[in-house]
Length: 522
Image 1 (cartoon, rainbow, N blue to C red):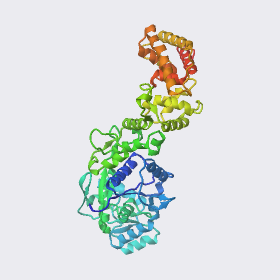
Image 2: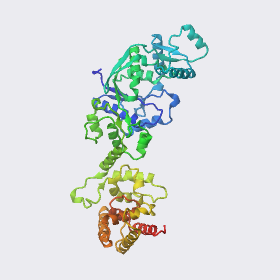
Image 3: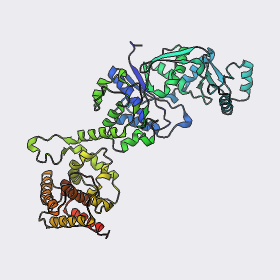
Image 4: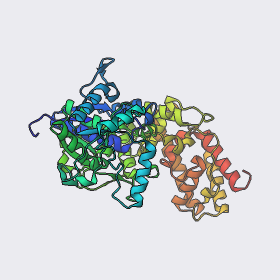
């Protein structure tokens, strides 16, 4: 096996949209193939026709393409490789099932679903080892089979699992694993509708596609002895197995939607970047060391190995995903400016045109319809202010809506903070309103270049910072009051830069509305 070329596959079932665990499995297989100079194959296991979800196949393939997880072969579709589909290979599975019947390694079972349910109930009542089937059709005579066939009962085909002995295999992550054959059932190979089960189709396809390694979720570990026995019955050489660690929620319970387990397509809609998602998924069960957390795609390919995949469960950490995503947002957005050109250094970073375009698209999609629509010129003014605070692009609409709102909505108590009295807040806002109204400069960030915005911000700070001392307020208290009054948020980008971009007219209007709230008029 060690001399065989690495060939791995990702074999999802379209019974749902691709979630974190599915795509983590795809990524680990892809990284292993790329690191080893091998091949990565995509195979859609669509034989469970009753549970197939409309649109799931497209979602799976779109998620892979979004993450730039490419595959190396398959039927040509529109000039590129499409995936293999098991539903197009049914004759192969039927022939294999017939071969196993002929060689007495399988048998036909005529039990109905009602009979199977009754068997399970009886076994549970007798406190027997829970198996799904009591093997009552295993040794039917030909005469008995003929009578059942005459009743128009369409049988399933079951595998004749050895009743004694043990089945062992070496898992590349877990080490030697052994199962007693007495704990295994006579599992179904071919269903009554003519479609194969996962067990049969999976083994046949892995053999025919010359799969060298099977990297799959830990939940399939208990199925592996069945597969080893089936490989042996068919005379196939089994691949090497590596069962990837489970992914748990932060409370170490099974990952669910309350932990953030949702489809990859939903993460994409929420404004996560593909390079951030790839980086995050790679760390769910694999690590290079105990400190490195940021990896480019090229670095992951170079460093990935099965030996560094953890034996213990991985913990899904939404905060870590947000931190990684924020890192990649800034990595892609912020442009290094030579010192000679860095007139705004320390005030706001320089951002790329691509980032401005992505932010504009996100805001245009996510802002409510009644809000003033963003223009590219305005977004160019906003982008440098908010890039350091973004965790996802989508949250920009909620966190920075004040740049587009003519009237802010917030609880008046936010104006007071923890210590300000109503009287002190009113006096402070009245004084700020008077100073700002008296300014001869009609500042408005829209359409102005960065240098002018920076100059306006410095002017506003020069006017308002001394006012705090005159009012007998701490700077933080006064600025916090102004921040809520002008933005409706307790946390926002740097105050004076924000005011410069919001513009004079709206800043004055917002301060007047804040005074009305405090006075009980609104």
